[in-house]
Image (tube, rainbow, N blue to C red; front, top):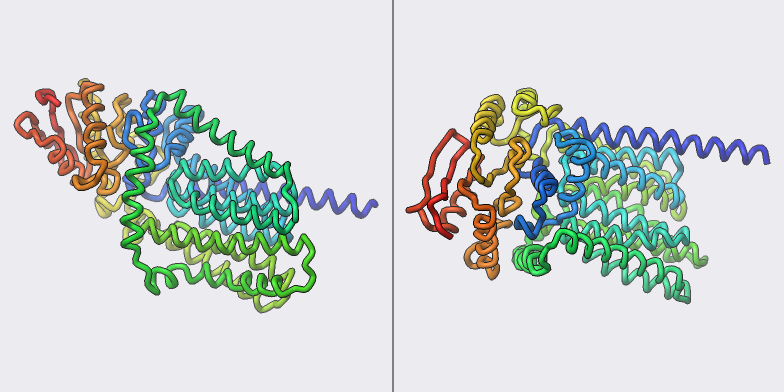
Length: 527
């Protein structure tokens, strides 16, 4: 009795120490990496959007948005709580990194992995998950919430706790409103596995059904409240977030390029980490002792393997920098646990640990130290300058971007000149730029009609929804009585798009202010 008591105290204390270290490390490590350079269109993706919400400008209603609004609103809360600054912006991403790390640690323990190993693999997740970009990003949020939903379903099956069933639809909703995929694929996957679980249990547990429906209704309530309170037209949401992105998605599926390099070469270490899990799962299937616990273990193993397939497929669809390398420590933890339980071969354990250590170091250097995700892999980061020279709200960021990789001081000076000129422009104005922090720096209350401008966020003339976009754009200009539109940056697509959209060059007065800064005065135009 005394021995068990001492053991329980030690067990709890060890977990507390692990959790404390993981919380501190996952937050501060991401804060540190995020300060190493920036890629404006990605690094500041939701900075001004969150600031706009504070001023009463809402997605779908006040600015065109084809990606999830959840990040914009969550960041606005971080700004209201901690002030509008680069550090509170990064803290948002660090918090999500911490949640994933801690949830992973408890999940690994719950499936039977020893505490020290759970701690080790969770450290790997903290290194590879959010630090690859460091700042809030739609793809990271959507994938992380889906992984958390997989953990929740697994823990619901193993622990029989209804809270985890409730959590599944909530997490999938947060994922969907971060980005449209991969949550629909996971929703179908979960529905199939819930049916299989009920079939194996030979009964439908009413408490599980009730918990799932409470989670669904709670999620629907949150979403409905978001639309109702902010008076967002449902049609705007459907066009911007469902119909138009679907037209892009169908095109991407048709053009999906699947070859050895894309399907195998890029993800080889995820596959290698999964091989021991596949082998263990095979022996679990062949096991003659098929009690309910073993059947449940089999369910969560196969569920995770299918999850890997979905995430790799979605990564191929997005054609972005690869963000799912943090699946390697997750997969390694699964494999380690299952190998010890059902196929106890030491050489496989050593292989798992070797893959984990090697890939964590490899991808840490590539994505964290060399900043590959934000296009700085070939840039000398030691040339960076302090971003606080531009504005104190950017304090902590070491400024260097792919736009001026050898002359960050020149870029800062151009932006500082631009900022000072804008501060003296009192007329109603919108700013179109990849440097999406100017509204907050000059306290401009007019949101740009688009969250950002590229060849995907803006429907081209052949697209069915081009007319919807054009009407939305001009309605925003007329409603806010915009007199000037300012373009800041090297990305010329905004200017070409604007000239084509308006097609009224006779009334536009164009002024080139500096290398990065153009003004289109449209006060004489009638729309």
